[in-house]
Amino acid sequence: MEQHLFVISLDALGALDLKDTSELPVLRELIQTGTHIQEVETIYPSLTYPAHTSIITGHYPTTHGIINNTKIQPEKDSPDWFWYKKAIQVPTLYDLAKEKGMTTAAFLWPVAAKSNIDYNIAEIFPNRFWLTQMMVSLHASSSLFLIDMDRKFGHLRKGINQPELDIFLTASVVDTIKTKKPTLLLTHLVDMDSMRHAHGVHSTEAKAALKRHDNRLAEIIQATKDAGIYENTVFAILGDHYQINVTHAIRLNVLFAEKGWLTVVDGKITDWKVYAKSCDGSCYIYTKNEKHNQEIEFLLQSINEIEEILSTKELTRRGADSQATFMVEGKSGYYFMDDIDGPLYEKVTEETLGKPGYYKAVHGYSPSKPDYKTTIIFNGPGIKKGEKIAGAHLVDEAPTFARILGLQFPNTAGTVIEALFE
Ligand SMILES: [Zn+2]
Image (tube, rainbow, N blue to C red; front, top):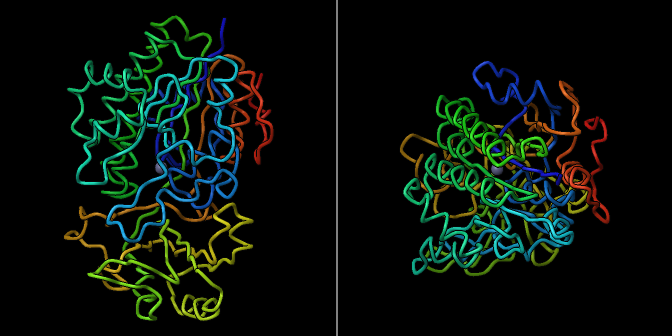
């Protein structure tokens, strides 16, 4: 019988979320009958697109190429995200699976638009006024498959609002398991991440989202039983990063504009010599030449809310974008914004919450921040039962997934987590 691997990403799932599973019966059972790697160190910057790409390539962002969620496009109100697969510079798990003729399916898996996945609902959204959600989704996804899922379950969606989007997605996953029985299935559920951004890490809304995820896992597991593949399916339930509550935003480009390093026309940045590109909890500083570097460093050192200033060499060593001149790490409680439409420092208030860019909690921080680990559970044939492993790295997941499917990456930064196999 063919071995299946179903990877289920619960965006923003932290190690702390699974300390007490008394109200999470499905996750509790998966832990008790599988192997729980309790603390997984994410990558830098700890953002969804870089992290999900590390999860399926085994490489750090500096190598796989997805160094941020969004591109450097200061002139645009809403920059493009790294939606498209072509931006990934190394082989992915689904590339290896396709080479061996395995059937693959993905549901809002980041950076998989226009990929070779057989059944793909791509994560993308329209950021230009002339585009609609259906136009961009059809272009980026397996279009006939998307039309079929939307015909069957589209009534469950309300645009891309949560929790309706994850309800639609879970229904699509369940149907696909029963009708297509994919060998490799990748799912990205965002309900809890959205609730944490809007309401805070430990909010009742975030806790309710995690309980909804627990129910969704039950539906997905049941679907494998209905499809007759449960005995041959390994489940990997994981997070990409955790979140940290914030109170203030910092706009470094306001400082750079005062220095005359930005060209601003009608309130828009049209050109730059020095540009701060936010990763929420951390921030890249890009420069077009070296002559301002000392002055930039001096400016950054004067900001109390910056915990650490990293040089190109150091930020590259930590796996971030080697094209950046500096990277700054915010202290817990502070995060960075790209725009210049406000003050250098701004307190997040009930009035500003709900506007774009204002949050109660964010991620993007250094993986070494305290209480900031994510986690992963493996469960299924060949996986040890009731085993706990203290720690691993996010980049260890891809080579481990490959091993489960009998595949092998040519090389990875991470290594196979041997201890979880029977
Ligand atoms: Zn995420």
